[in-house]
Length: 166
Image 1 (tube, rainbow, N blue to C red):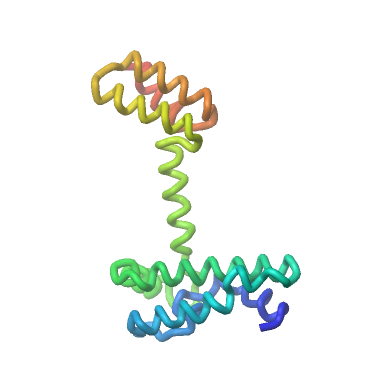
Image 2: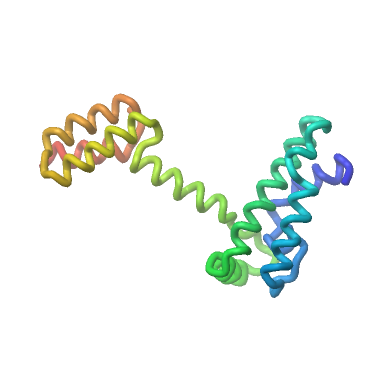
């Protein structure tokens, strides 16, 4: 593929479902999906992009990321079944919300609850331990410390309000 074709594919990669991206039939067996993934990952591996212009390199990385995402969903029978159900429910010509976007939302939710920074996570782990022992004063102190490292963490703020009101 030349640079223009790679940029064009990168521009439409979000509109393709995982089967189209890997160029396999929806009823393809796992071995065919694995082979298609290996073919696509060889074609769009980031190491291929060493000597190309930066815009083409970004396009290759974008495609490679989606190829890996497609394979991670289609190789797992449970995730593939769920994906097929979602694909059927949105219709063939509608864009399917990316599994990656859903995973990112879950990751951000977990980060907010557990902390984004190492010290935020460390102090919030102490808060959990304090609460399990029933030591509310220590939990409040550790939660305030967690908030010094993550002052914009709304989950920590809400937890502090909740503990303060008790």
